[in-house]
Every structure is written in structure tokens, then in C-alpha cells.
Image (cartoon, rainbow, N blue to C red; front, side):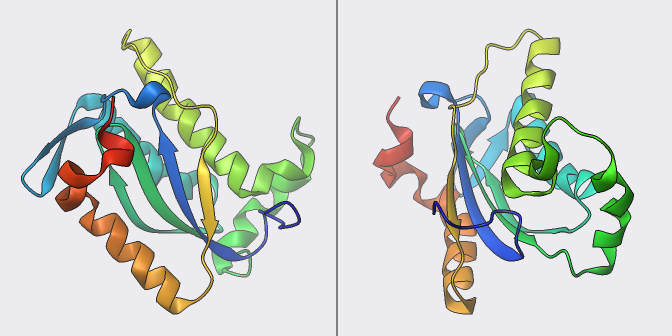
Length: 163
């Protein structure tokens, strides 16, 4: 949404795809995703977001063969938010863009990409990502369920399974 401040307190549903939807993160077997080392790195990098952005709460997450879905909550009122106060005042190339959704996603993508390059894994992200601002508790629960059940619906998901 053009007028939305993506650094404001809110819950966000994120989808990030691999370039050309190449399957590099794992294989769906039954109702589970068996992650490759790169898929495990995507998982690890997602859960490391909190280490770099203590004002973020991480909710549901899934790494699928060619995309990830995650639910993040920015809460700068939380006690953890104070830990970033000094960092925010340091000079930085991105200015006020250092404490928002885009900076989190950028850091996540860099972490996974760095791992792949260091191991000479052919990998790239799709340039952008999809976000949805969570409207209310019912929307949040619907999204959480969608994320958790995503592996079970993989075979029927023509949006992501087409390579």
C-alpha cells in the first residue's frame, strides 16, 4: 500500500519466491518439507531476524521448495525495541529505512544469498516480495493456518509448483 508506513507497528504476511521459482529449499514429502541445506539456512536466517530487529515478533513460518511464507509483527513498543535505540541513531546508508519491513527482508535475503554463494550453490531470489498487512485477529488466524498447512496443499498449488 503506497501510503502505509512499513516501519509502523503491525502484523505482516510475507511471501518471497526464488528466481524463476526454482526448487532449491527442499522437497515436500507427505505433509512435510524435507529441507536442503539452503532451505535450512532460509529457516535459520528467518529466525535470526529477531537478533537484528529485536522489536520484531516472529510468528508462523514455512520454507517451501521455491518460496517462503512468514508472519512478522513489528512492535516498537515492546521492551526489546529499546535495544535498537542506539543503533537507530548511528549514521546509516538507509537512513530511516533501517527499522522497517523492507530492511528486515533485505537482511534475510542477504543471509541466504551469502550462504549460497559461499558454497557455490546456484541460487537467486525473485527481485521483490509480496506483503499483506494483517487486518485483524481473524485475518491473522487465517494466514497462520495457511502458512502451517502450506506443505499439505503443495501438490495442488499451481501458483508455486509450476517451474
